[in-house]
Image (cartoon, rainbow, N blue to C red; front, side):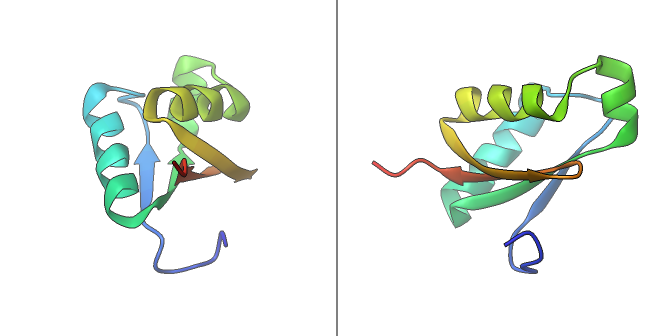
Length: 81
């Protein structure tokens, strides 16, 4: 699942979890149902979040399910109704 080339990846870097990034992830989730979010090194160093913290924040803000965390990549899926 993490290697699937059809899944769109969004990078989160020095700008952090801003509204523009959250809207972009939400748009991809609505269109494709699944997205990978890559946490860049400069984001982790600048903001001090753990991968798990970011996964929880994204799942709550976007009403998404965390499929898994591998390295610095978080896979999210739209929650089924």
